[in-house]
Picture 1 (cartoon, rainbow, N blue to C red):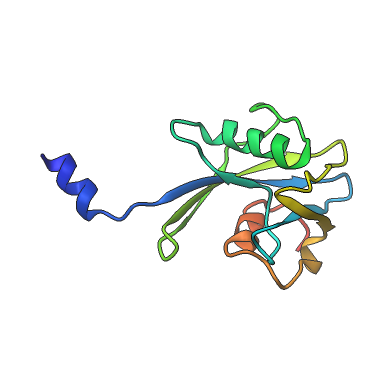
Picture 2 (cartoon, helix red, strand yellow):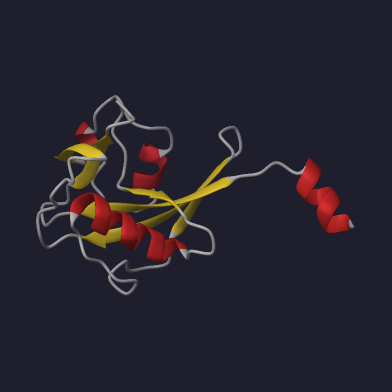
Length: 138
């Protein structure tokens, strides 16, 4: 009974996973999707019962042709909780060894940016997610 009440009155959150993808020059990969004008990190929402690492690996493969397994995603992920947007985002870090290829369906543009020159039009939470990883140039 308590669980049912909690589910009815507690706010629901969507859960996503994104990757801070770096290249050999220390630049960060950002994408622009067909639905958004703002730049964001590659990734997306988790499917039901999907682990965050599996979700971000799936999204990278679908959107950019990047093959990444859970071990390649490296260190322990960080988590961004945005109560206003009711969104939880699990943030992974990955060094890309090959150039990504946008799918042209969901992702319409890709770009590499130094942290000091990020575009002004960033999706909510993107700058914070990038900032979790201190070795990135700011």
